[in-house]
Image: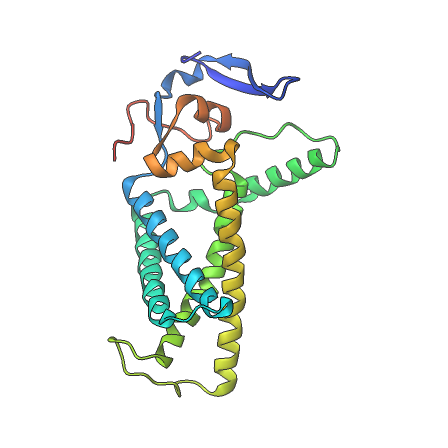
Length: 242
């Protein structure tokens, strides 16, 4: 079946089964490049900084005593730099809009919701490079970061760093109060999003995505099972080696 576009269904035993095929899969290589080395490097640097931020923010609440503030702001700067790098990389070297929600994703979400309720709706289409739920998560993490990162950078003025002199009077008490609340709430949101991300990353049916983020590519079978070659057009000679 390597020369055919395979559509998959679920048999009575809950197993994925090919139910239809046609010749469009001839252009799909054995390994399909999904994430470049640069994109994967950003992802894992961001993941390390995020986990460090969440761990150091939770430390005093859990009763651990160490110099967590310094580790926290260093990890925050690393996260900020990685986000700036990602914005530049995505804007000039990647398809910037491919990860953002659009009208087609909204229609897809409504269709799946109707089917989940047992209502009549057309069969959901296979995804382009990024499924709609993947895009929803990306949007949520961006919104949380937009609140967490700027407030965290401004809060650095209250601690002594090599970059500037400590100035706890940069804002009034009321402004600082709002900033701390906003930083804390968005931080809690990031905790939930991170836990959800890890949970789905280790689930057996999602591990092919996780492996793609580690090794950079996915198999032809996973591509044809989860993606529509007409919505995500791949080069038959393009294989990720990074």
